[in-house]
Length: 385
Ligand code: FES
Ligand SMILES: [Fe+2]
Image (cartoon, rainbow, N blue to C red; front, side, top):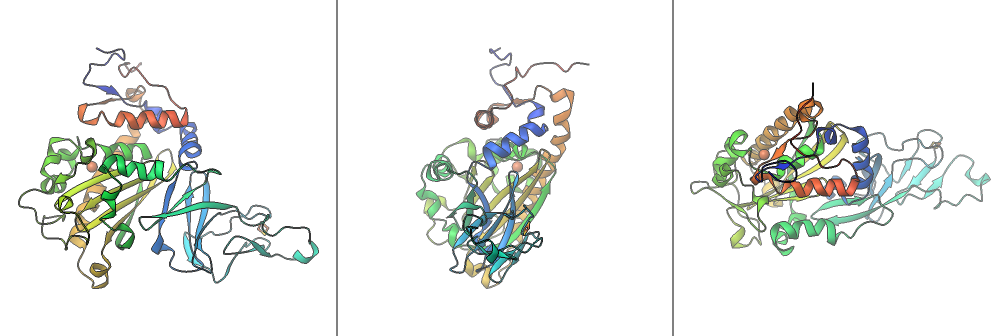
């Protein structure tokens, strides 16, 4: 037994309340989703000036758009007059400005206030000062990342560092040319589970043999329970008879141009905290973005990215989409089966991590240190009557 009261092969998880408590979730919104770089949209979702998407990041609704020069812009979705929401749709396009539907204050695509009823009678009103509140943006891997913090953390030391820590180098992801790929399929999952359950699930493969028959067929080493994320720089090898990363192991497409030889016939997985999973296989990328909306609800947007040639020529992507779509459904079903137990007395002090899951403890410690919420438990307390 260790000081925690657990045998050495086990580590404690977070207590159940970490997955249900609204106060914990608020702390996560404030200290994680609103403070870190958050991957909000694929650049192709914003295909020209005035095209917009609205996304929920922490407690804020954010408008993503392009200005007249095509540059990316992000604003809080709040009118500076009396606070009405500007965009009420998830996506759309405006010609040249955003107009509030309450008293018609009107903002250009850079957020500047350009018109309002009787505006000439208020010559002292500074139009930039009373423009939409701007949010910082960054482009990487063909995605728009935004940060609500006034002083964002270093992108290199957070987002890109997560990739380096997993793959061994940042250059290893460049050969996949993710920024040049095209969305061949997008599936949006509305998962009734806490976002941390989804992260933990993605980080381990102890469950692979039980719930992922198709995936373990393609990646036989996953049947042993050790996820690719357990090791630095490790990609899980395809099985000998497997021709492609498809639901039945049938051939996929040509390897992505520029792919290194040692990256062929391998699967790599990366978690970019707090809300991105990147899956690399030779001929496509599966890119997950989570939008945590409530303690027990997370919307996951999953993109399957292929070369433009594959998408433009209408090649059949269904067999490769089907493999990870099934994996997603299997994983999210497991997370949804787990969520109700988080409020059970049986889980008041949490559960345990087996050796192949021990690396998840670092994620728990990170959440805890970042939010200042929930203390470690002994992991061995008995439920009380
Ligand atoms: S609240 Fe938007 S114009 Fe009044
Ligand atoms: Fe899984």
